[in-house]
Length: 391
Ligand code: ADP
Ligand code: MG
Image (cartoon, rainbow, N blue to C red; front, side):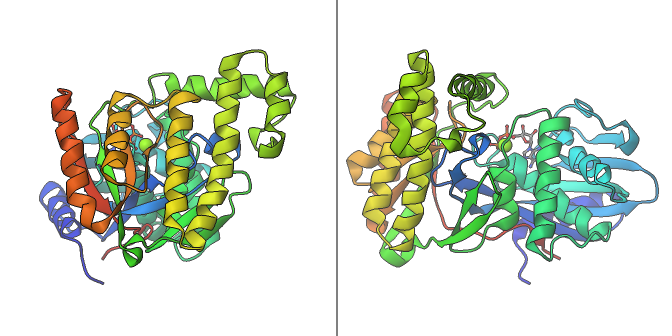
């Protein structure tokens, strides 16, 4: 297996920090969601791809029940006894690591103490799911080091997904719906993952824009992206309030053809807009999967544009930077563009003809400079593979 430079580097870091060799290196990808935003906690559909950018962990068992973690992206090492891991403890980034061990132990697995060194190429806090990449790389390591053997089958991988979601929700205390962890565990090269967040069934859909002369351009707007600042939670609460008024268990139960009568039942315009986004977005995910299956990138682009408008106007989770990046991409000739991730910053994506990629990224940079905004970072991504052992 060819080794990524970061995989070698994190193994070297591990040896320098602990004075011994790691027992292995594992990695998991960041993700970008093509379409289907804020649908996961509404039992809906989404369509993410794994990124070529990955998080790498080098790890080795310890004879005691202690977890020690280092990260190239963090200043301080953290040490915690496994018996002390609980909601909110450890605080900060180590919760994403400790939470995975806690969750697997809670499911009845024997989990050893570990030394873990982390390094990552996934931009942190850019809406590209560095948190799930970290959890899933750790989960892959624990699966192998504790002899759980969960990486070898999809059901085993889904067990790891659940542990990573529990780690993030319960120990890191960050709300997450499961899309990120499912992608990091189940994605495939040159495929998008159509994910049903009600049944947790998945279907792989062809995703190879290069074969059609196009590229997916991701723009990290560098605008602050905080899922914990209350906006994410307030959207979830508004969906619950709408369900109470509709007398339904899930917005997935509202068919797009029955949307208008459902909206008429709601007591206010905010709830009507929120429900309209969720229901039409789920429908757009189905249409996007069909467009990819039939190779219709123009249609996929139109769906991107409609999705962005829905998030900007109905779900109200866009911001100046995301609107500017997507408007600029469209003006230069993108087939479609949308914000991706939870919103309020983070990243946008655009489908761009290969020969217009440079012009598009320069135009976005120029527009940000003219608006006196922090310089964005744009890059082309292809769909990458899931969590695995590197060495
Ligand atoms: P996103 O997942 O979109 O990047 P989140 O806010 O969900 O944003 O997760 C970011 C957090 O995950 C960071 O603040 C940090 O606590 C943790 N994290 C992610 N990657 C790393 C890493 N390589 N090293 C240490 N902590 C990380
Ligand atoms: Mg995250």
